[in-house]
Length: 153
Length: 172
Image (cartoon, rainbow over all chains, first blue to last red; front, side, top):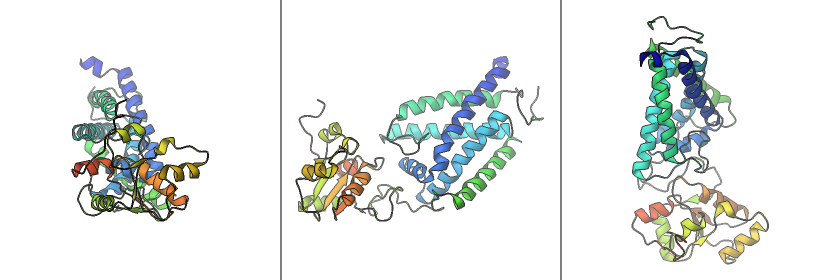
């Protein structure tokens, strides 16, 4: 099991998939913060006064972590953030399903018409989280610009 | 190490997010003024609302207007949604399927050629849906002087326990 988790190629694949997905997802949100704010508002989970701040900061965090993951800079911190975000997204999506709120997830194109159901978004996020956890646990440091000396092996 | 890196990334994101907003053409207020949904504290106004938009009304005003019977209620959702539960007496103008040709004529005809100052209350599903906002803006552009948006939509109406109209065509 350890050998699989630490596999250089699998780790790189996870970095590319998860990092790439977050970079792609951040573009529209960075360009259109008002639309992304509305997507956050739909979830009914964030206090009104914090919605715009979250809409401004979160996409940049996704972008920076995505870049960090792919090029291997601040890698551990980036992996931690993206896993934490995925857990938050999964909880938020699951709560909308439970509460029967029909939303566009706001994952990619913020506040567009609902082309992406909450269920498919939820499944995608769970798959990404599996890759994310592998990435976080992996001791592979191959193809990373900034090596982490605290990781054994 | 990991936590330090995570905090550094967050700090960079805060600086970039707040900084870019200073120069962005799509800038937003740092502190949003959003009403909590279903707080009963006035109408639901979406973040995408702009100055000059038609008025937003809450479910109580919508209900009063409905009881008064003067306003035209317009359901901007798709036909199947309209058939399966709408505010009684509403006209269906499915925003996403409105014709490009003779748009004004189509709207006037669908509404029954009302006076331009007739109150028109536009709604769709609820707060996740923008169709009512877009349609009400179009009505304003067409010269209607009294459109209003009931952004709580069919769902809030139903949640309040008000009567819903279901057509026999529902599910067909």
